[in-house]
Every structure is written in structure tokens, then in C-alpha cells.
Image (cartoon, rainbow, N blue to C red):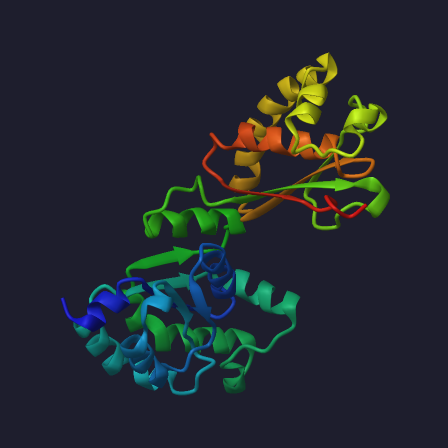
Length: 289
């Protein structure tokens, strides 16, 4: 295998009809950790692949008719590039004419080939120009009736990744007295739990201390809360993931963000660690008092 083949093995070219969802696909790959470039001029492709090093292990590139040289360049040059780098993958997105017309009407953006007449004429001209490229594609997706989550599922299957295990879940403890975190997707208020603040020997400790954790967790209320929370999270995480959400922030708040929220956020980590998610945990207001 040549060096170009090795480097191109993790390179995806996304192309197809304007309005078919190429930017949506690019955002999906960006969430998966790909280095993404939109509207890459064709003449830069070979040079990019040659110079691509370890820091660019995974590339996703959108290339289409916005580049004025694209239609004249791809037939000969792309075929040669595929022979040189057979592990480069081509994804072609398309949609029905009526769907494309509606999408262009909604976004009020001109079609790249609209200069040849109406939007419909631009669509027809682009189809003709790209017909041969479609035949070379490793994957053709019709997005006419697809939701973004459906497109994500197909792309994940194509690159050999399971639909599960891609989501990043960030657990965040905080204190309401300092304001609720605006980035929270799910927020639980745990001010109903026993408060170590009112135990003099625990007031200056934090939820990271085992004495505080034991005090909070030994409560029957806390036990029942966590008992109910576990199946809820087991249900919710796959639902968010199925919808195509790549990042989920779960915030847990108490009064000062020092005791109860810290303990419960740590317990949520134990609950979620067995699920196929990438976990992180932070305590926003520790040391803030």
C-alpha cells in the first residue's frame, strides 16, 4: 500500500446535488471527530492527501459545483485519484426535484447553476453534470424523506461505527445561588435531599469528601431518587442518541454547588459508566464560595 493510500483510507468526499444535505452530513462527521472542510477546490485535493499527516487521521470533505472547476475536473482527475488511493470513499447525496425546489425556496439561497435559468433548470443541469460521478460513488443516499437522525444512522453504518457509543455526556454540578448553567440539556434540582451544610463538622467540606457523600447517600430519599433515576437515564440516553444528539449535558444543582449536587453528579457517573457513552464530570462551583 502506498503512502497516499494509507492517508486516504480515512478520507471521505461528500458530494451530490445542491440542497441534498451535504452540510448536514459534514456536521455529522464533525461530531464524530473528523476534520471537516466545506467547498474544497478540486485542485487542492491531491496536495491535501499527500501532505496529510498524523494530525489529520480522519478527513471529511464537501466538494461540489460551487467550485467552478469541479465539473470539468472530476471526470479525469477523480478517476486517477481513485486508482492511486483506492481507500478514499465517495458519498453522493441526492433528493427528488420537488424536495430540492422546496428546500431552496425555504432557505432563499440561489442554486449554484441557477445562472443557467431557474432553480429547476439548475437542478437538471447539475444532475447531468454529476451523473457519471454518482456511478462512481461508494454510497448513494436519497435524503428526500430523511430526518437528520436517519442520515446519521446511514453514515454511521457506512463507516462501520455502531449507532451507539458516540454520544458525549457531560455531568455538571452547580449551585443555584450562582445561576443555572445555560448549556444544560437536562437539569435536576436536588435541594430536597438532606443538606450537609447544616451539620457543623461538614459545612466546610465538599461532596468529594466521603463523610459528606455518606451523609447524603445514606438518606432513604436519596436512595429512592437514585433508584428511580437509573431506569430513566437508561431510557433517555438512547433516545437522545437516536435523535442524533452528539453532546448531552446533565446538570445537577443544589443551593451552593458544594455538597449535594457534587455527590449526586458522582453517583450519576457510576450509573452511566456502564453505558456506551463518553463521560466527563466537572463541578462548576467548587471553590467558588
